[in-house]
Every structure is written in C-alpha cells, then in structure tokens.
Length: 332
Image (cartoon, rainbow, N blue to C red):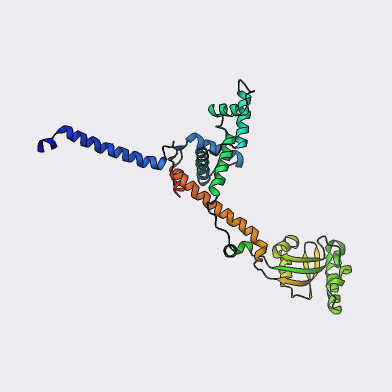
C-alpha cells in the first residue's frame, strides 16, 4: 500500500483529475453566467463616433456625464438587439421580411424568385445586419421587457395614493372670476386717471352690478369677464402687480383703479376658488396611464439589469471615471 501511494503515476493521475475538476467547474460557472456569449465591446472608435454625433446635433462636445450616458445607451441598444435575435423576434415580422425581400431583389442574380426564396437568401447573405432592422428589433424587445407577465389590476386606492404622491403636480391653483371696466390709456390720454376715479365713484354711489356696466368700458380684446383664471394666467396677460391686486380685492365690490400695460381697470371680483385637488374621476385616466408607464419603466430597468448580468461588457479607450460610471450602471 505504501509503495502504491508513493507511485509517481498515481500522483500524476490524482493531480490531473484535480486540475480537470477545477477547469470544468470554472467552465460551468462562467458558462452559466455568460452562456458562451461574445462580449459587448464599445470600442474607442465607437466612443469617438458618439462624441462626433452629439457635437453635430448639439453644437458642443458632450460632458463626462453625457458621454457616460451615450455609452450606456449604446450598450443597452446592443443588449436589446442581441436578446431580440436570440428570442427570434424577427421571425415572421412582416416589416423585416419585406425589407429583406426588397434588398435581395435589388442585388439578386435572379430577382424573379418567389418571396420565400429571396427572404432565405437574404438571411444567408447576412443582409439582416441592417440599421433599420436592428432598430425594429430593439423596439420590439424594448416593448417586450416593459410588459408584466401578471399585471395587477389597478384599484381606486392605487389611484388615490398616486395622486397624493404627486399632489404638487395635480393640485389645481387658486383661481379668480372677475369683471372689469377697462379705460384705455390710448383712448383716454391725460384724462385716464381722472375718468377712472369718476367711474369708480359712480359705481359705488349707484351700487351698479357688473351686468350693467358694458357701456362704461372701452373695448378690451380678452372680454370684460374672465372666469376661473389662475395667478399665472392673469400675470401673463395683465402683469404681476395687476394679478396681486386682483387676488387681494374683496369679493362683491368695485375696486381700483388697477393698472395694467393697457390702461386702468375698475374691478369686481365675483368668486375666488382656493387651490384644491381635482375630482378623482377628472384625472383617473391620466393617472392610470402614468402608473402603467411607471410600471413599464421599472420592468424595462429590471430586464436590462438581467441582460447586463449575462454579458461581459467592455468599454475601451475611455477615461477611468467614465468607464467606472458605465460599469456601475451596468450592475445597478
């Protein structure tokens, strides 16, 4: 037994078996992660092209953060394209088939062949390595990743919770409904201030209601009654000072004169409505659409994360901070 244990041949067999086990274990582990897929490489030339395209469109070179985003977009595009090809999303796609048949008919020695023959020949020749086809496949894979396998039906509480989370976006601003008598600076000239005060005194002394005042006003392009106007809208048309004064006027009484770029206004505030949340039924469909978009974006992000984990991604020729940022996003 001792002689057998000291035999060099036995040692060689044991060592060989050990090395074989390690090699096969490593191959299995690595193969499970990458599936034997070719690495995704963003070359130096590709990065330069991304910078050139960005500068051509925007007129300036991309910042480090913008370049990192461009690189990541290029990685994601390749991930989507490869996944689409692996899932055969081009199979029986009519638009892709038509494009390949048209390309093959243009270059074939026998363009009279039937459509199926032209299609198969185009695929064999690699004519499907086409920018338009790649874009179609990326879009199809993009939509596929956004889909939930078992989407949960939205309940009323989901809508209410979303509305509360985004209340600042849905909140309806304070509004005011008011009538006014307009005295034009161009028409009244130097008499503007005096005539405005006279009009205001007449209105007070006779307790005149807004409905009976049209004859006292000069023509005004926006009309003499404005309903449910927000501060922002009034500021846009009349100026900030006018808006501030109108929102501070006591309701149901004539006040002024209030100045605007057009002249002077004697104002009657009919109603003020404080800011408030809209009725649920008014925003229901909008919120349903936004929730579905959110869920789709989350599904897409998760899908891209899974695809990144299956590929070896290499970014060449970029600075260390850009490379690190892109790799961090890869794993996020």
